[in-house]
Structure formats: C-alpha cells, structure tokens
Length: 102
Image 1 (cartoon, rainbow, N blue to C red):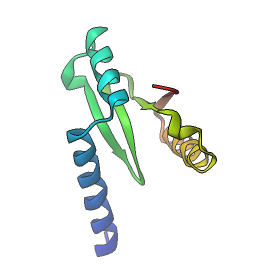
Image 2 (spheres, rainbow, N blue to C red; image 1 turned 30 degrees about the vertical axis):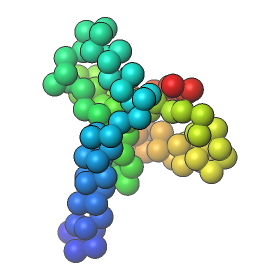
Image 3 (cartoon, rainbow, N blue to C red; image 1 turned 60 degrees about the horizontal axis):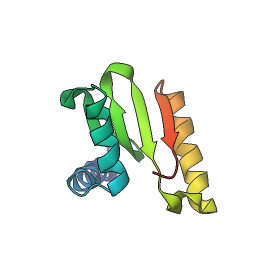
C-alpha cells in the first residue's frame, strides 16, 4: 500500500471515529431503534468504513448497511453521491437500505 493510500485510509477511519463520537439525531435514533427491536450492541457498528465511503450503520449478522438520511440528502449533488454509495455496497455483496427523512 502506498503512503498516500495508507494516509487516505487512516483519515477515513479517523473521520468514522469522529462521526461515531458525534452522531446526528437520525443516527442516534436509528441506533436506539435497532437496540429496541432486539439487535445486540455488539452486532451494530455505527459509521462503518467501506472505502471510499463511511456508511451510517452496519449490522454484522445480516451484512446490512443502513443510511439514515436527513433532508439535506434531497440536494441533487448529494443524491448522485448517495447513488454511487449504494451501488458500491451492493457490488461488494452487502444488503443496503436507505431511510429517507430520518
């Protein structure tokens, strides 16, 4: 792995950690709902890295990625990025759910 690639992955994981420490209200609500319906805390990973993206939530036992999107994701430029993000997840063999207007 080149130095620039290594730096990119370190930055991506640092960003994911920072996002876990400061979740949005939608991400907090999603995590609480998943616990309420019976998922174990250790089966849920918030801010999961699948380069070059960070996904809001990963449920290990289902190989499921969840994106909890607020209204900002209605903007055209974010929609395009979100579509690419969904395609990558599916291409890599993950189930993918987008929850709009969280």
